[in-house]
Image (cartoon, rainbow, N blue to C red; front, side):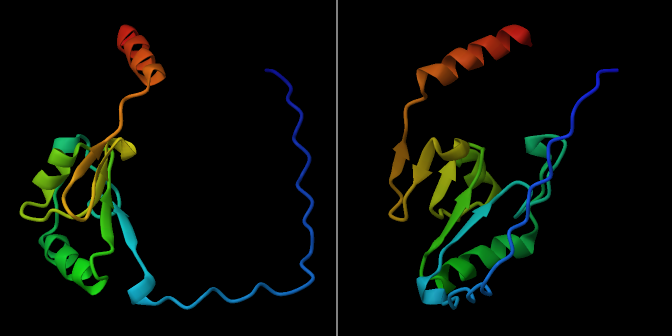
Length: 128
């Protein structure tokens, strides 16, 4: 077994003054970005195995309205997959880890896949 040295413990610097209170939370000036898998819905063994609770589907439009539309979904899924989970609801969303975004007006913005990511994907496929 290899002997490893422990990293020195971080020194704690005492505060000279208490932290200020956080700013007040006002709904009119707030936005929510909600992750789908693992937050709005429970994780499943496969992406197709998830189940969306009815109360979540019913709550999201009311929440978006209460936030004056300042609600967006975040996911690693495609936007089409996200829309399939929440039929009839087209909230602003970021899909594929931010590579594709849908704005509040419904326009979809796509970013090109970086060359490095394409090369990495090819290398990982070779390992599979």
